[in-house]
Length: 318
Image (cartoon, rainbow, N blue to C red; front, side, top):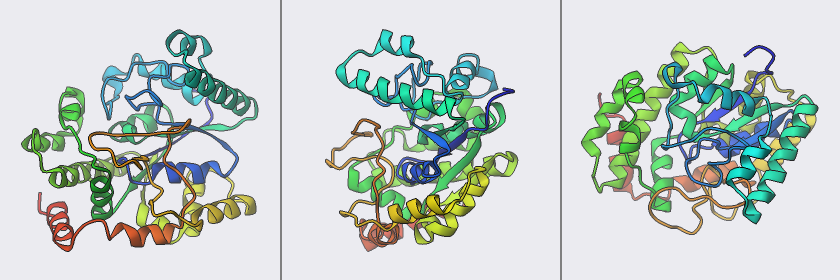
């Protein structure tokens, strides 16, 4: 991968703050923001101009054993080489064409201007080690408190389908703790399933950070409580310039008036149930927010009984 300028990957479970964090890093002016290339829904996924490979699962697992298609595809993505012909062959709706112009222009100008790629992708979580080791990414994994995480999912009516993880043999081989999720396959207990996903993601993140020098853990609550100190640390990790302009843009975005949403990943503002839902040209949930107020609101989404249950399940002995 010689010759590629170090890209940045921001990942973590959906609703853990990856869009917010990615946009705050992009405020440096030194990165080109690439939203969820591994999202299996179109858009933002299935856009070969951005990533010329076929995504078949949420949390698609990539490792050296199956990287033949993924490595060249992501090498082009992080090199900011947009595939105009590949995109036109697959996607030709007015929306897709507008998105192609937007991303194609962003990639081209970014490459010519010496900017680096920033991948904001919660679906890269379990593959984060591969991104660090094979693509040379500086990886940031967002972790969120289980109560605010589960409350956010419950408010949106989201659930998780564990078969999308368990039907990937290489993923279960390399992250054997995921096998415990089989006990909840078919369960209608959305709260218990969300907590189980949170536990699995936390175990994975801690393991990856311990063995991969290119992976850094970041706490969503700490970032929201003190965005100035938190983002300065992430800028240093990502080799970005913490300029007066970047600081001003970050602080302005993190103290904005909010309409009651928490500003983290996934829009879901219609309250639809089921899986995941995104809207907007960039398919990102980020919006300016008062990060401290968002923290206070997160604790109001579950009843006291639900909060107690979440904490019991989240921190029960293995």
